[in-house]
Image 1 (spheres, rainbow, N blue to C red):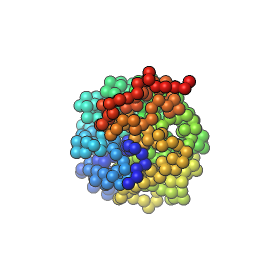
Image 2: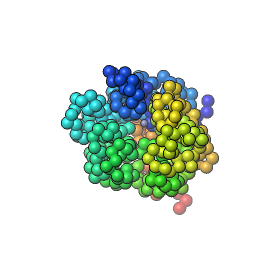
Image 3: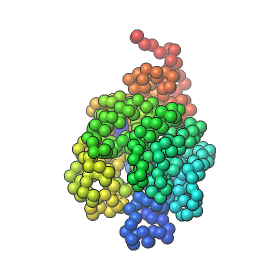
Image 4: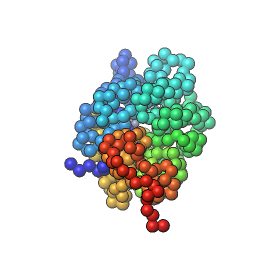
Length: 409
Ligand SMILES: [Zn+2]
């Protein structure tokens, strides 16, 4: 069977939940019809069998497991890694701290408690990154604690980045959901992202969803994308997840100077409450507008998208089946392949993730090296070799040293 790339990684998987409410609260929230599937504590569930089937079917070699909603734990991710060491790696966050907070066991929660849990998790050596939700976000995003100001969150990010650098792992940035439930805070999360990257140049920051939904500020989403990707191209420690992108995201990102060596394919796989929808369905939106936040036109630049079921009339808030993110996402990469080189696609599909999360790859020389168009003029210091030998399962005995490379001029 043909695969789309030499080595493919889904960098954004959720395999430990079906989004069912947990414990005694379960019956009550269902009866009241209040539970949307996005809040509070959920029941952990091993959702790996369909994922492994899909990975095999679509040629996805490895997946990075991210704990996310309250109820998923760091430890349940590690259990899956131990069961399938050739398939999965796991990230960690302040999962148990959040569970304890929402159960009322941590009434005096402070940000440092969240940071301490992540520090202890990383110390075990079982985790390859921080996220999906960076410490604190699990709690703030439910609106039960006031969201921090931009400067307060910026300071918190210094602590997060200190851990990321100390343990040499990337930190995921998903702070765009920080402000949704606290109207008092009006700052722009993209300003925060930029400050975090510049404040902490040695930390590697992954933007989840890579600005998939640029329909904000009531402006043309393409103008927003142009501005964002130009900024992202200038931040050398920022990595973009490309899972839900359409071709326009890729086109504009490359036009604005972003490089494949900082892009990674990742899809929010798992029973997340999203459906894949096509243009025309927007009139079923409950809110009447195209997005909850603004009146920008979410569908103006794309024909299909993944959207939350809870926003639509007559849709079950949580899909009872697994929407096929892989078939959808791979077709997008196929279309992008009409103008993007396969070497760059190999980075997006797996090479960038292999380097960032230190994943094992089968052979030497699978990914581009020494290319100023991809890595910049300073590729020698930072980007050669692309992967060290200890990540290569069957390394070749010889590697061309830089001083033996031949250049015409
Ligand atoms: Zn996710």
